[in-house]
Amino acid sequence: MKVRVCFHDKCFDGASSAAIFSRFYRERINADAEFLYTGMTHKASQPFEDGTFDGDENAIVDFKYSSSPQLTWWFDHHQSAFLKPEDAEHFREDRSGKKFYDPSYKSCTKFLATIASQKFGFNAAPLAELVKWGDIIDGAQFSSPEMAVGLAEPATRIALVIEAAPDANMAPCLIPELATRSLADIERLPIVQKYLPGLLERHRRSIDIMRERMDSRDGVVYFDVTDLDLEGYNKFIPYYLYPDAMYSVGVSASPVRVKVSVGTNPWKEPPAGVNLASLCEKHGGGGHARVAAISLGPGDLVRARQVAKEIAAALRHH
Ligand SMILES: [Mn+2]
Image 1 (tube, rainbow, N blue to C red):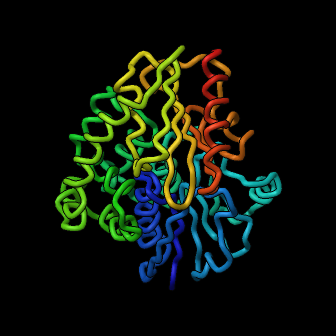
Image 2 (cartoon, rainbow, N blue to C red):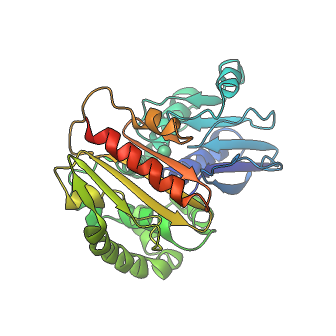
């Protein structure tokens, strides 16, 4: 029995959701399941390539819906969960009882643990630490910018490795560990230790670089790091450096995409009526009300900068 689990790649909540799904599935649905993991990335083009759903069961966690008849399980909490209105319609008509969506949850980790417990009798108690940190990290519920940027807690260090390690197999390797071990134990694993010291050093350097690059005006921090290998930078650095800023708009690049990231300072109360997911949807992106992004093709640098500057200008007026 093969179960294909597609999860939001390079994301602590995505990996944690896949871990909780796997443990839930093994304990409550089929003890003999063999899991195969596929990390999904928001790309400018269609994310689900033909042949993605090749399991006896196919699940998507913490990522967009697919109307494929092969998809048997779905859990998501993103406001922009549906690529097309027909997908939303398809989901509304689903009667499988195995597809779940609630954008009011701060993390898919907590959403999945809650549904699995309430509807399928899963005991999520052994995973309480993972659920707690999934919600803190994905929901930006750190007590201070220093806690979010200082990376003293095992969960924040594992999140750094998942987000930034140059190893496509990192999340698939860590998901079974996240399902069974404590975060302190996972931090000590050789695969984590192989990358952690270098990534922490790069993180410290990135704070200095971003300090030089950031332009903070009228409550909006703008920065462009497309010429540097900085995708996967810590998204709380803008508010650590500029605690009074309400929003940040950043442009970064990797070999596969140029990304415009738009965020709200989690330690401030934003004005009512501003929805960053809706703002980014106008440019083909999406996300959540307080944090969203637009992914463009690797050749779309000029357009990405133009979109980022437009969004920054619009936010400065709030
Ligand atoms: Mn999430």
